[in-house]
Amino acid sequence: MMQKQEESTTLPGVFATLAAGFDLTAKHLWLLILPILLDVFYWLGPRLSYQKLIERVVTFWLEQPEFAEIAEIMQFTTLLRDIAPRTNLFTMLTVPLVGVPALMTGGAPETTPIIPGVQQIEDWGAWLGLFLVFLVVGLLLTAVYFTTITYALKTQNGDEILIGFNAWAQRVGKYWLRLMGLAFIFILNLFIIYIPLVLVATIFYIISPALGSLVVLAGPFLAMWIILFISFAPFGIVMNGRSVWRSMVESFRLVQTYLVPTLTLFLMIFLIGTLLDWLLILVENGTWLALLNILGHAFISTALVAAMFIFYRDRYIALFVEIN
Image (cartoon, rainbow, N blue to C red; front, side):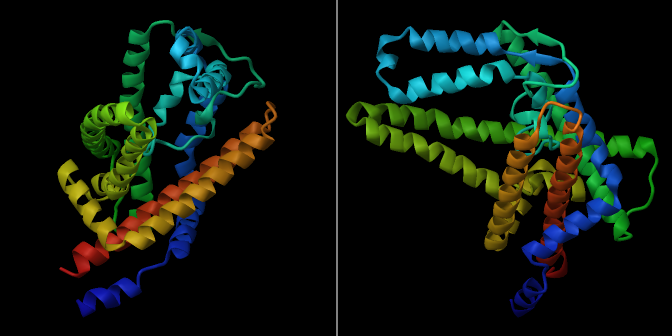
């Protein structure tokens, strides 16, 4: 126990880890290629809009007399109408939480130097099919992106040697399948949480609308903790070649052991990422200068992802390697 405590005190702090992420990215600028290409595609490439589908939903809600008296629903329909023209299903190539970072995922820019082609999706079946396809392809891009960061990190430390394309592609394929398995388990857990929760919330809503709303809020709270405790599972899959189950177990133990540093790291990354997106979108003016925003976003976002890899590596070694 004393040995574990001594080693824990020597671990780099959150700020040192963030600095190491920026240092790694600055020394391996080729890591920015995939985020830049993906963001440029979102910016100037063709778009798959589902504006008409959203407008149908809004129209349906507005036609329901019981909804007209609920202010929250009216506010939500106004929000949907505002974002509907900027929807682009291609942005699902950046998978939420684990995808390749991109600036343009929050909504297609209203003005661009080149007018992109827009294709409307008018069928929910087509939307769902394309959504799943892009989700799968997005996880492939994540596997490529994470593998390149892992390779840069290991070669910098002398732990990796140059490998051929075939061996690299086999690694990416293996990690891709495991990331899909991890995504499936996560989605399944959400269903397990939300289905009974909705039933319980419905019963409580009959008794008291306020109580029912309180029960509904338990869903995001539980989902947040699930995300937190399996947050390092993708890194275990890609960096250490772990199976889906083992990566989840090790992630749980790592977060449990280093809960405060983990929360601090994620809070810092969230604040930096949110502020970065807000500033870059604020100065975006629809000209070619937006390319500079994309470059800056790719660098900072990749540095933050690299910092998470470094944080995971250091604490994994301290928890599972050196102690044993």
